[in-house]
Length: 614
Image (cartoon, rainbow, N blue to C red; front, side, top):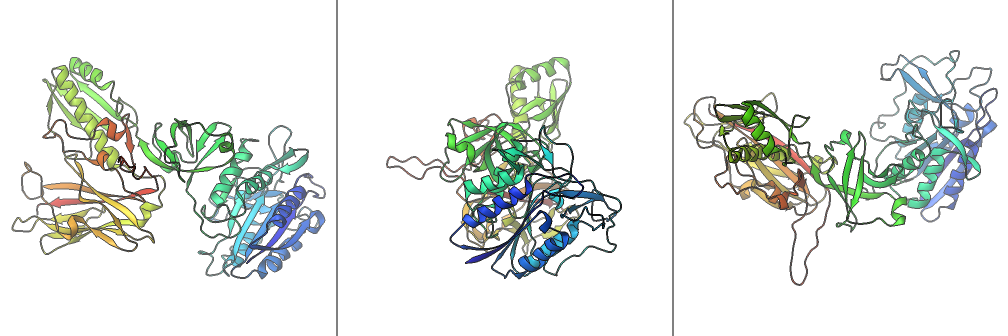
């Protein structure tokens, strides 16, 4: 049974300074919540309110009360009160500001310094280094840096903080770094706001409360004491944002760690929740989400429930349910989701040359969603002269010129541009959730034929033998996780082809590797028509897609350009159309029923090979 040593600090009464009204309420409500938890937790409490919460008493509470925790215990430090910030020339503070908690006597005439972030962090990490799970909940201004500050807030609300006073001296000398294990055993921080923000309190249901404490305890009531930190933070953040747009709660620690235990729990990095702006997923441009139109699918037995991205924001995206209506209770809980169809910004096409041919090509491009005149997508250029058009801007080998005189010619040119755009979509494919991407890798090993070297830019260079023989290599897909994963290896060639022929998809056991071509060497050669002269080369991008379930491979089959079969390549029904690249399981249809579509996490890893004639 886990023992939770809890220290609750709530300070409203600050002598000679701005008095707060909800901090003691916060501390008492938090203590009451913990007392209601039964079962696997044994709580040991210590509370410091107002005059009891001197700097010396708070330090003693952390060092003596929380410090008695053992390796299988939890230390909980909950602080609700004033916070502050001050200028510092410490080079490790990138903003030039450090933060501090304000104890009850920190504002007294004796000039006692506040409880600085470096001091508090070192104390908590020292406890964590012993194997204790340490959690700090700070409801104060500047709490993301371990503090809070007085100032601007919403109408009727009060900021919890004070301005830093210049006569309070900061001790000289370097910050404590904690024990040798501090880098691997750190405390978890749930903070009311960012380091440069203020936290607020106001009357809620007839009592003054801190917005963050009220929202976090509400989230705990909904999700339970074993909920993951990430889910709690998402729900608490929305509770605060519903009251003020100027305060952003922060989580520093593992999103999949269980509250009060830190033990890994089943948790996804992306959550669907209902906000003041509508339905929202915590995945945005900062995570690699490129464009509206992408789809997320609900996990946990809801593979048929999808949401479509309508607007991509820096840290999140606004979505709409697609073909289903959320129940009223769905609005009050976060729902784990995973991206299953990615949208890409249309390729930005520049047309130069004969005006008539440019108008013809522009009209043919209009209905194609993966192409646009100008913009921020993949830059492609078409130069038209003498009835011929040349395309440039792709990452592969130059494509042959095409005639551009008739409408049929223009449609053929649009096919070429769309083909290049699709190929680049696969090349650029990566999941904003990087977990599985970190658990697989691709290796290329030389054999007795040819040579293998690594260039300064990271390419794997495979050279022909002096006698002109094609190099041979062994290509392996490694699963370095502790779970079985399904992997497929795509070969994207510089002729704008993509094929899974090297490794068409198999489950790879934990710690094992799958070998391309079932263990046979992979022969590398320049494509037909490319002269075998010294310095000539061809490039291949080997991309592994790893998933928890089998994957439909149809969207990843592209012939080289120009294709020998004009009808080859993925159909709109297979790729999703509209610029979408879908990552879904194969669809099984049997009279007696069969496995239904399932979704799960996925990721990618990639290496670049250059085959060179030496």
